[in-house]
Length: 320
Image 1 (cartoon, rainbow, N blue to C red):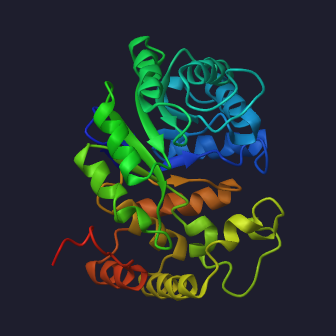
Image 2: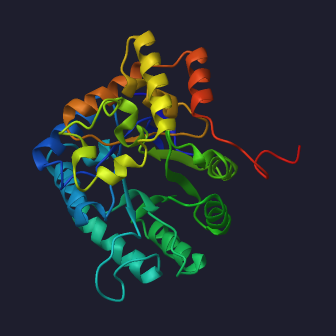
């Protein structure tokens, strides 16, 4: 798998990341082990998790696998914090106390002495950003964290935090796909200005871009589950249907899958370092890994750009 620099840092990562949001829930330990081995065998290095996923179980599972199955040094280990909430004065949020307490918890669950990429899962309006950033500074200078980033920040939040940070941000995780291009208005320019690499989550439009929802809801899909039905339904619109049809048409012309087309499109967007791909099983992951071989022809990329384009207004488009 091709490697890329993450933002303007010296950290090199695979241009696809393995997501673990379903680990400890829909994905059991045996299936998680199979996915991790398949990903690493394909040349993947960046594995993304969060202290929030399955109440910390995803981190625990990953920590066990890195201890017993895959060498820790073969993986760029990324996790996130802020969103997980527990009782007590340090039970969540982006305060210095909460962040450093969360860091110790993640290190313990992941069975490691350091985290390669530690990311703030969300902006916390209740805490001064200077306090939050002081915790990131300590985490890096203490050696417990190598690099830092953010997730789900608005453009102004990303620019503000990056401007004040003593330790440079190297990554930003945002929803980004042919169905969700909103970050192109302000987040993408802010990330480019500050040298921050983009790690798209839901690069397959929460599964909709695979085309499996065109004629209904498969019984074994996330759209059929009580937990994820609303998550998928968000992108089941008339506009989405038009985009999905364009993706399916492109896939038929190229002799590949809609999944591969959608993933290749977002992977090669300006500023993107690596889409974060989650899978229910190893079969699904194998389909995503196959996209590594695909580069979209300019004509097809242009057609997909047009059908999925978003409207830019003032001030993004300028004063003309």
